[in-house]
Amino acid sequence: MTLYKRYIDVVLYQKRNGDITPLYLYWEDGKKYRIDKILSVERRASQVGGCGIRYACMICGKRRNLYMEKDKWFIESHQP
Image 1 (cartoon, rainbow, N blue to C red):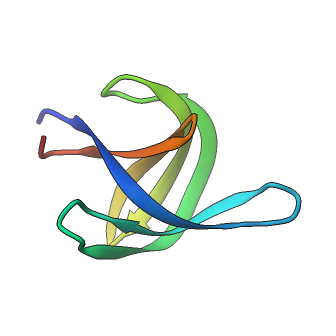
Image 2 (cartoon, one colour):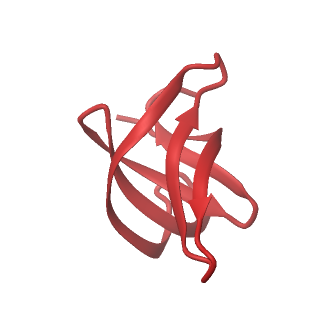
C-alpha cells in the first residue's frame, strides 16, 4: 500500500525544558483527533521522504507515525 506525506495542524504541549508532546491533530477538513498514546520518540527518516523527529503514536486505536520536520508536522497517510 502506498503512503503519502500529509501536512497537518498539531496541538502540542511544550515543557520548560523544551520537551514536546503532541496532543491532537487536525485534518484539512477540520476533524480533530486525539493522540491516545506516544509509543516512542526518535530521529528517523520517513518512508515518504523527509526526516525529523518521529512520534510513533496510537490514534483512534491505530499505530501512526507523526513527524516534526523543522517547523512543520506531517503524518504518513494512505490518502494523498
